[in-house]
Image 1 (cartoon, protein in one colour):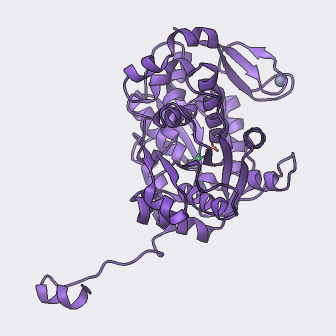
Image 2 (cartoon, rainbow, N blue to C red):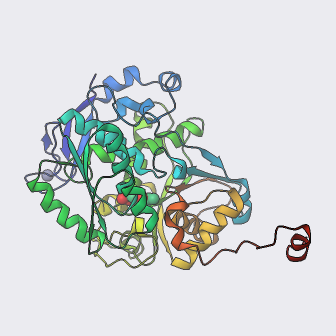
Image 3 (tube, rainbow, N blue to C red):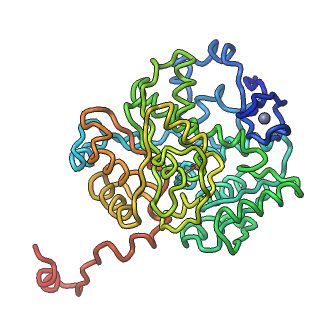
Length: 408
Ligand SMILES: *Cc1c(COP(=O)(O)O)cnc(C)c1O
Ligand SMILES: [Zn+2]
C-alpha cells in the first residue's frame, strides 16, 4: 500500500513523479515527498501505532516507501530519558533527553535515515548504495548495506575520528577517504552521482532518505504521551534533522494525533562551524558558507544543504540558535555523563552545552518542558575527551596497595 503522492519542489511547488529525483529542473530547488494525508488518516490512529512493534516502521504510512519495509526492523524507538539530575544541574524542572546514542545498529540517529533510504533504494532496483558522510552516516550505510546485501561506496573526509573510520571499515565497504573537508567530499560526490548509477542516499535519493529523520520527532511526541515539548534543542549539520522534527510534529497534528504543537525549536552548532546559527543571530537571510574548524566533526558542514529550511523552522516555531566552543562541548559531554550516565559524542556535547547556555540566558524558561537531542555515541569520538577525564588509580594486587593508593 502506498501513501506517497509524488515529489514537489520546495521552492516553486512544481510536482514530479515519485522517482529517484532530487532537484527541480526549473529552479534547482530541492524536492520533497508529498503524501495522501486523507488516506493516511483512515489507518494511522494512536491505536494502530501502539499495536505495532517498537521500531521506526510503526509510523510506516508517513514514510516514503511503496511496499513493505525491508530494512531497519530494529532501528528507532530509542529511550526518551527523564533527565532529573541534569535538570537539577541546569536549574530546570522538566528536562528530557532523546537518546539516539543507543540506536541500532550503529549508535546514531543516522540509522533512521539509512533504514528508510535502503528500503526505498531497493524498490528503485539499485544494487549499490553510496554516501558522502561526516562519519555517522558512513557507519550506518556500511552496516545496513552489509545486512541488506547491497554493495556500498562511502566517502568521508580523510581526518575523521578513528572510531568512525573503524566503525565503517569493519563492514568491509568500499571506503574512500578524501583529502578535503566534508563540503569538498560532497561536491565530489555530486559529480560521481551524476556519472554512476548508484543510490547516493543523501544526494540522488535524498528526498526519501531525509524523511527517516521524522521518526525522531514522532517518537518524542508519542513518548510524551501524545504531546510535544515546549522546547527542543537540535544539532545541525546539513540542517535536515531539525527541519524534519518540526515537520513530524506538524504531520501528527494534521492527522489529529496531537494538539497544535507550540514547540520552540533551537538550532545548536559548534562555534567553529556555525553557519546556520550565525545567520539566525545576524537576522540575515542568506547563509555564508564557512570553513569548519571544530572537534564536532559530525556537525562540520560549512555549506549546509538545508540551512535555509533549518532557519525557516527556527523562525516559524519562534525558537532561536546558539553555538558553543570546543571547550564547552567537552564540558557538555562530561556533564551529561556525570549526571545521566549517558556517554554522547561531540554533537551531543553541543546540544547539552547549548541548552545550558539558553537556560542561563533566560531564553528557555526554567519550568517548561525541554528535550535535548542526543544523536550519537561517545565511544566513537574518544579523541575529544581522552585527555580531559581522570585516570584509573593503578595498584598492586594487594589489599595493602589498595588501601595505600585509594583514598577511602
Ligand atoms: C548528521 C548528524 C547530525 C545532523 O544532521 P543534519 O540532518 O545534517 O543536520 C546530528 N548529529 C549527529 C550525531 C549526526 O551524525
Ligand atoms: Zn522548482
